[in-house]
Amino acid sequence: MKQTALLTAASLLSILFLTFHVADDIARGMEPGTVSSLPVVPICAAWLYGTLVLAERRSGHVIMLLGALLGMAVPVLHMMGSGVGAGGPVASSGGALFFIWTLLALGVTALFSLILSARGLWSLTLGRAR
Image 1 (cartoon, rainbow, N blue to C red):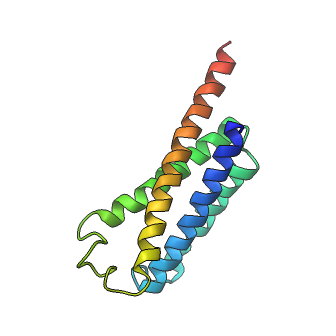
Image 2: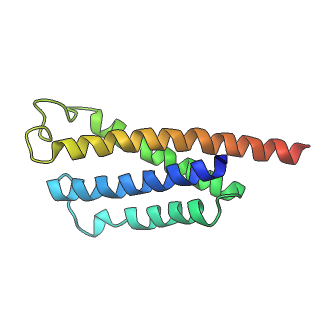
Image 3: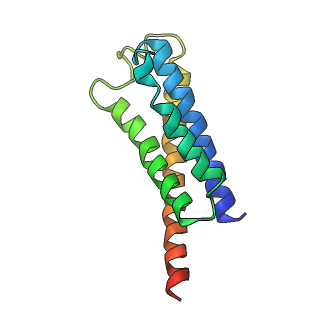
């Protein structure tokens, strides 16, 4: 399968998992669910634009790389401190499996996107040097 198609699919999955996760954060009361939660909308829109419209360009790879870094930060931030494991506030609430699964799935797809976008940027740089 073409690397760009894999990167597009991984980025789309990361965006999906990120939106699921933000919605779950709001539903659980971890985020206020006010206007202060709306910056995720333009961030995801820019990431989606870079993924679907600019996929073959350097700018698209940069946008997907930045989105992947953002996506990888979410599980790290949630796992710091008290974490989400046994005894934490998430584990004792309903739907904890979905919450933790979206964290893990987001981390995996974001890391995969990061690797593919870095490889794509590297190949684009080498292609210009020749």
